Length: 160
Ligand SMILES: Nc1ncnc2c1ncn2[C@@H]1O[C@H](COP(=O)(O)OP(=O)(O)O)[C@@H](O)[C@H]1O
Ligand SMILES: [Mg+2]
Image (tube, rainbow, N blue to C red; front, side, top):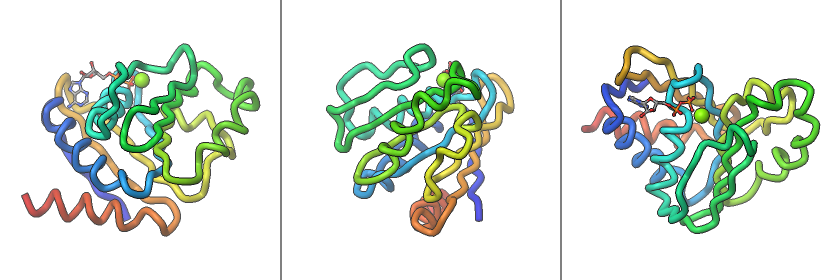
């Protein structure tokens, strides 16, 4: 299954992130974000963090690889694997595995560089750039655990 949601501007992306945050805040989740540079992987993450009440400033982890936020409703680990590409991934495989269990939220930008280090139970989010302000978000639950979350998103979006 998958759920496609069109966001016509950043405010609609913010609104989507609010619903998403509400759906994952009790259980946590492991999220893979796919999309070109400028698609909105970091922008979506910032909005989700805002609705989980993160007090720190949320920035792109593209240089540091991992940012951690501990002031929100649940612990948040925000990876950007772009700079590691294929060779460097072995240096963070333990962290990726460690941050795939428990009541935490892990978000991974450029998850395509993670090779086989992704947990089976996860949510894939593909972001397609349509034009300057418009993005298509495609949510796909991988494994059985997250189907309910994506169904919730589908329900919320059709019941507006
Ligand atoms: N509907 C939208 N959803 C997400 N980002 C948007 C949208 N419209 C415009 N943008 C802008 O696009 C840019 C996305 O950049 P960023 O999140 O850093 O991309 P990525 O992390 O995927 O490389 C931001 O400047 C953001 O404000
Ligand atoms: Mg980014």
